[in-house]
Image 1 (cartoon, rainbow, N blue to C red):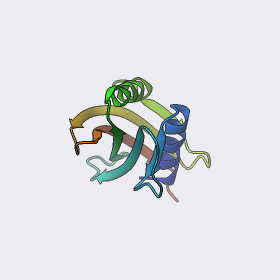
Image 2 (tube, rainbow, N blue to C red):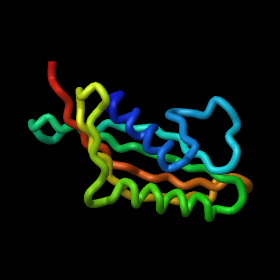
Image 3 (tube, one colour):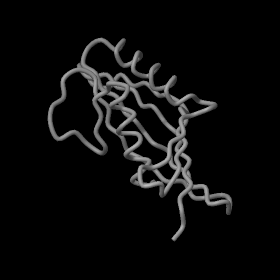
Length: 127
């Protein structure tokens, strides 16, 4: 997954007004927050498309309605059919991000969580 795609997702989380960090939180966030991680998928074609599955895990204490609201906003933003397409700032790659699916977990007694899977397709300029 390219830096451009990772930066796009971070900017999108900010645009959605969601607390977000890649990998792990270094502090103790208040309210609802999300942590992202990804897994690259082996290319199946020779057209230069690269695909990754981006796992966006949301956490909340107590009421889960805020997580459901955030999930709905993310689903709308990254439409499952049309996705969201952006060109990296340095124009080195193009990324298309699609909402794929959601898994809910009860988590611990106090912490509730939801995992949102995004499909990321990228094409980058070859050197």
